[in-house]
Length: 224
Image 1 (cartoon, one colour):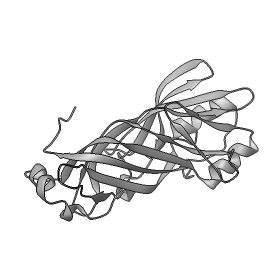
Image 2 (cartoon, one colour):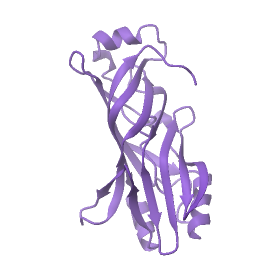
Image 3 (cartoon, one colour):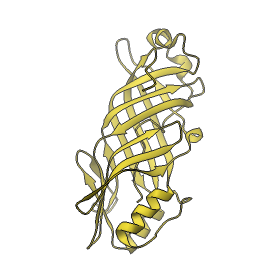
């Protein structure tokens, strides 16, 4: 179950340009103790399988496919799918002066399909929350929906975001890259149940997430 991502920005992007935001961003952030809050308005999230994950899936004859509206990222051979890009459904994040996200959540649309000769596993509508670093997705094995499962995890403390202030009336650009993602015990169990084999451990980095999005600073947002 090596897939899920750069949970848009719920866990991926950063560098301390926050102090250069100025103008509207500073005004919108006034009164927020945790940092500047942003609402994402567009962009793409990218999930790439690590070399370890690609090799083990290939050895088991498991192919990777994109589930629309996600798009495939092809390797140098022009045919091997090494990852997917996914558009956001929603996203919001609070970033402190060091570029460290202190709160955030988001969901991306589409996903990935892992397919062998006997089994198809779809991992879609990926969402994450910085409160615990878990990454959830809806899981379908063959034609049976399993439900929403915490398949992956990332370390919120490892996430940094790079902020580029936009021109007047233009959104700020948020970027993050190379966020390591590991499978959860639930994810490992789901993969083994589906494919009848265990390829990874909970410490294996199977994905790396990246992303870029346009965002507007906002005063705050409701807890729910």
